[in-house]
Length: 184
Ligand SMILES: *[C@@H]1O[C@H](CO)[C@@H](O)[C@H](O)[C@H]1NC(C)=O
Image (cartoon, rainbow, N blue to C red; front, side):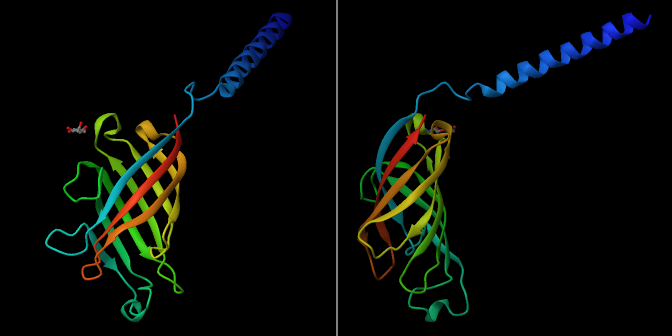
């Protein structure tokens, strides 16, 4: 009986080694066989603080925020429209949802943390995530695109923002966004 038993054990280990080799092979395979491509998108971001239907609302601040020249400590939650053109009535492409927070004491500089949620055509339901620094008085600001979902899975890239219009009375702003994306 003993040699028979040894044979079974040997067979069992061979079997295990085969399974492990197979798992190892699978791990080496690429996750996607799709080709990476680069896309450029341009749209306008509408930050509406005034009026009856604001899309940007200050939700938090520090006791010193109102006396700070840079509104340091203010946190503004947004659900801003993204449109094809700069007019508020222009076709809606999606919404910028998230927040910006005044994070600089030397100049006005926001931490932007927002998702662009698209609603048009094949991009409907897909998102990209932006996280970066936005010194709004600069002519051009650049923020990283740190990821995406749907058609923008595994996206990376950058967004360049340029103020198109600003109303100092209300604080309303229209900002042109150019987004360069590597995605699949
Ligand atoms: C986008 O998708 C939603 C839900 O999946 C759907 O209700 C809506 O009609 C779609 N919009 C467009 C413009 O295709």
